[in-house]
Amino acid sequence: MKDISSIYPRAFIPYGAWGGSWFPAWHTSALAEVDIARFAAEAMSFVLGRRKVPVSRLDYLVSGSTVPWLYKFWGSPYLSHSLGHRLPGFHLEQACATGLQVVVKAAAQVESGSHNVVGVLAFDKTSNSPAGVFPNQGTYRRTEVLSDIWDNFAYDPSTGQSGFNQAKGETSMIACAGRTARKYRLDLSEVLELAFFRYQQYYEAKRSGFLDRFLFPMKVLDVRGQQLGVVDDDLGVRRYSSLDQFKGERELDTCVTAGGQTHASDGMFTMLVTTEANARELSERPEITIQLVATAEYRTRSGFMPDSPAFAVKSLLDRTGLTMADMTAVYNHNPFAVNDVVFAKLLEHDWHKMNNTGCPMIYGHPQGPTLTRVLVEALERTVSLGGGYALVFGCAAGDVGIAAIFKVSDSKGGSRK
Image (cartoon, rainbow, N blue to C red):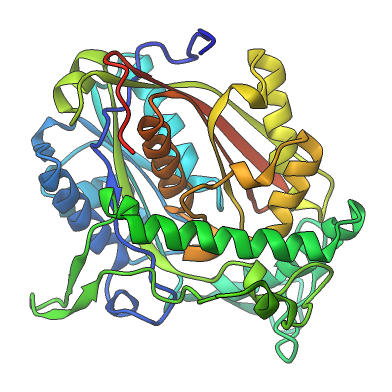
């Protein structure tokens, strides 16, 4: 493994001090009925408890979400109160990049010496998302009502591009994927083959128990403390036993089918960023060190969001001197199969060697925690292969791509298959 210096040499991620909920599709679980922020904070305490990390060790909290939640004004201080350990901190959002940005910002806190053990908490609930009423003097109605999830997915205010067609099930996001597929002249047969392959990767990861390393069954309680249900599966995942099933689905737009796109979900994820000494102490395997090597962001042409992660990765590789051949694990936050085919084409990378244990296109897309789960999967995969570089990337609203490389070292040289 090439020895590349980290941009945050003082910040480390303790192996195993992470985890989260499964991602049930919207309105398929009891998560639809609860305060997702409070649930996420209490779930963070549960996960850390399972990892034998006292919440009292934390001295700061960086949280992230994208869908408005009750008492969002109070941000991380409210979340830490619900966690059971009152902490300073801040809350951020950057659409689907949120789950990676919270980790990067936590690393900056440790690197600066401001804090020593920073908790990261990302969450979102697309079920029962709020609607807001806004004064707008530019319209004859003088007010605008916004349904946070569906109106934002159906309309891009920067470009004026919209495409919501309820009869056809189309949104501007689907149109964005179709437009990008046409730009790069993708072959539908390859996109369908990739989508089918991604499902098989997920099924195998679940069957093998790999996902059980970091996904926890969680009880959902009402305000009285009575159980509403248990979240113990990625509800909403489709079952595909043959490629012919994909070929039988109609195109919603160029190279976009039902099986080749993600679905709205609910969920949370958490992890820690801390100093080297604390990472050894809090890690399940102290011989493993994990560091953030570098990050990059790129904004592509309006309406072509699916190609932005590839350009972010190109920038990252150019800056570090690393190549795709240096990567042990490659994981993309891919709301569409189109994203992976475009990436493979631009980086000349074999898409069979990506997202080896599943991806958001299969298990769902709660936005805030999505890239945090992707990151944890990538790190677990890299550890199981004995260490190396993990490349994690994805797209975000506004035609932005984000990418990061993490270095995983195992002083004992062991692997955990």
